[in-house]
Image (cartoon, rainbow, N blue to C red):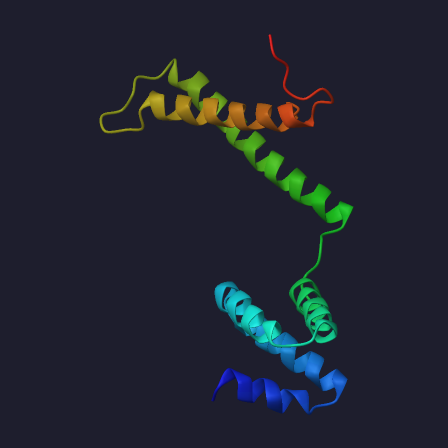
Length: 143
């Protein structure tokens, strides 16, 4: 079925049903097809219909999703991420400390691997607490 035929048939529906149908169509299409098809169809419509369709498109692409998480959810996610990395940091440190006193087993884990894990986790955790250069009030400074 041709896209124009679908639009014509949907055009005869009540407004509430149109919204439901358009939202379903928009969600099922890839972004590339959505943009090109929407542009082609809207170029032939009057300005009032174009504005209404664009508003529907925006509300369909933004609404009815999961939405933004609450501050409590954000805090919980940060606690989980930082705790997981802290556990890895402590585990790598303990492993490195014990490896000083034990000879490496034949075919065992090399100390360099644990050291790389340790330094990566330290770098990650340090990066969480260092302010972004873009977030500074003055922006990047020239010497």
